[in-house]
Image (cartoon, rainbow, N blue to C red; front, side, top):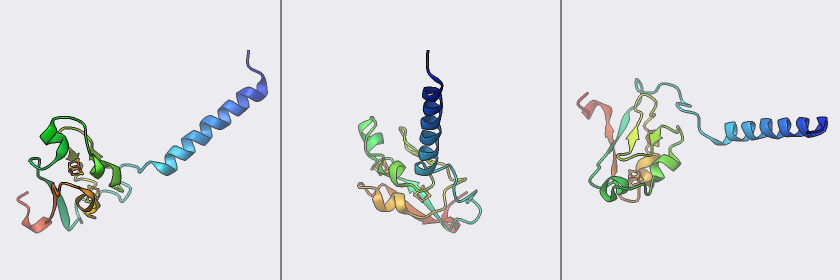
Amino acid sequence: MKMFHEEVEANDMKKKDENISAMCKPAVGEAGRTGDWRDLRPIIDNSKCTPFVKKKAACYLCWLYCPEGIVKAGIPVEIDLDYCKGCGICAEECPSRAISMVREDKCND
Ligand code: SF4
Ligand code: SF4
């Protein structure tokens, strides 16, 4: 059976962990819903994207560096455009140059 102070310590550690992860993990859509005011849209060319080409989980630097945490590291990689602010960091970090930043008024939808 746990002593009272061990229970308190365990709860404190749990709270501490929750706080740490809240500070370290980007929350989805930290900049709010940006789809309306974004100027540039990231477009992924799957033919250059490593996970899509190799058909396995790989690279995902766009997922790692996106400050909004809205890149889904799957096959294919997906970006939640409702919350993408168009900063272009993903495109800058992509080693395969698979992401292009395209002006919103040049996009079809
Ligand atoms: S442009 Fe790229 S890095 Fe910037 S918010 Fe959108 S998906 Fe994330
Ligand atoms: S960084 Fe580029 S190559 Fe890597 S997963 Fe993202 S889009 Fe694909």
